[in-house]
Length: 87
Image (tube, rainbow, N blue to C red; front, side):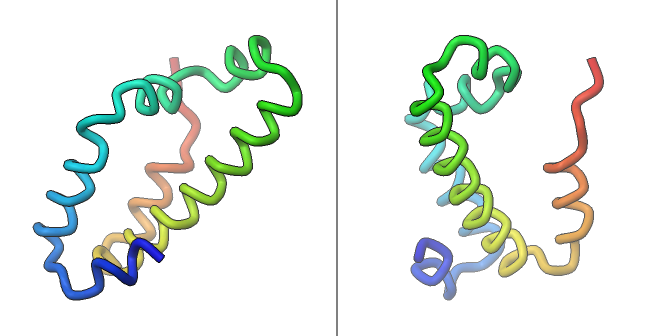
């Protein structure tokens, strides 16, 4: 698992590695920033299920990493990640 590979890193080194992994994933970041209603309206049901399953797995891994590296601020991080966006 990803977070096991990074178990010996410092917080700063982990944050740097995370930033590096996202640097070349512009399309992924755009999709994640989209309104879920737009994604649902413009996707085939079977692709939507695949997307939601992959997103759930990614979020679980990411939350595990936050728990491991930032346990002191984990509740705040989770509240920030899961809070609804006000527009």
